[in-house]
Length: 161
Image (cartoon, rainbow, N blue to C red; front, side):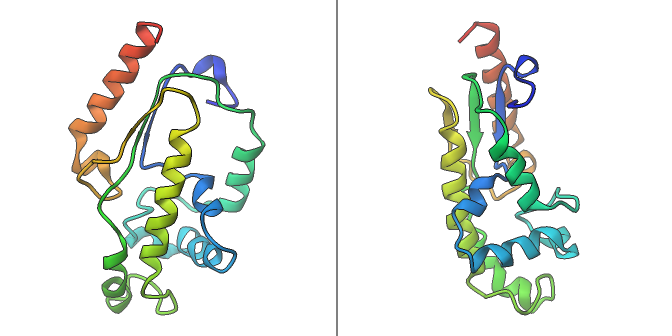
């Protein structure tokens, strides 16, 4: 949307991963998050289920270097089910490395909340839905919510709002 603004007329961001996650974490927290994002461990990690191997620092730097987003209809859907309570059992089950702090899910939850708020401020008059009754796979847990958000954005684009 930033690099090809003539091709994008509206956005629906579904619990999107963004540079705001990195911005919201400390220099001690980010390397842990990066490890979870880059390694094979992410396949069992609910927060990043669809990630391929990526270099988050490089990707986020590219987003920061892109021109600002132009005004357009935007809806941000944010997970409201915390990830924090699941981390200790995931470490115990071997789904996460043993060196991940047991409270790291709470760190991620807080950072993701800030990142989602940042996304919702990309354009004026955005819609930010935080009552989703879902975890980080809103499209699977609440597909109607995603469909409705897409329809609303399409309608806004068609009506010139």
